[in-house]
Length: 168
Image (cartoon, rainbow, N blue to C red; front, side, top):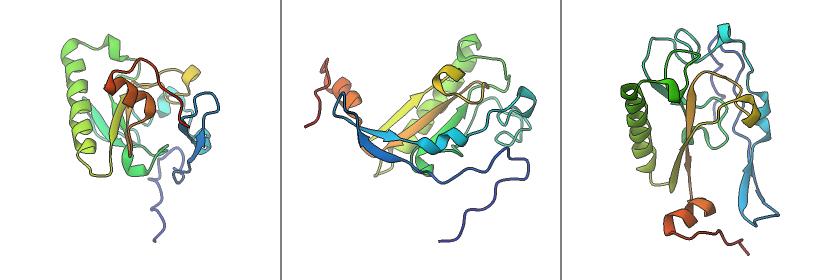
């Protein structure tokens, strides 16, 4: 297999391979994914934001945009980043309704595209905002993960169960 191409010269850091491992959560008995390598992701000042127009991940002007996650917790082709707005200081809640609709349409398009793949069993759209939850770039964005199987908690919700029974 040929080596991965180098990142663009203006890239803040080179993405590493997706290194994750499975483990059993001792409290729930559920299988979880541990991704220790994600700690090497960039923490950047606002003037170097890769998500602002002209940045590494948004070289052209945009209204909304998606791209593959450079630091994927899953296989690289099953983790995407969605940029909500070019304004670095915006939040999803501060956007006008017509722009929120544009973001939701992009979520739906990417969910449909990923969900149509035969190896994908579940697609999760989410937002982590703030350093408290591990977000390293404050620009308004979310992520989309395409899992091979439906996670137990999601399966319980989909089947209407109110509690997740531990595996085992």
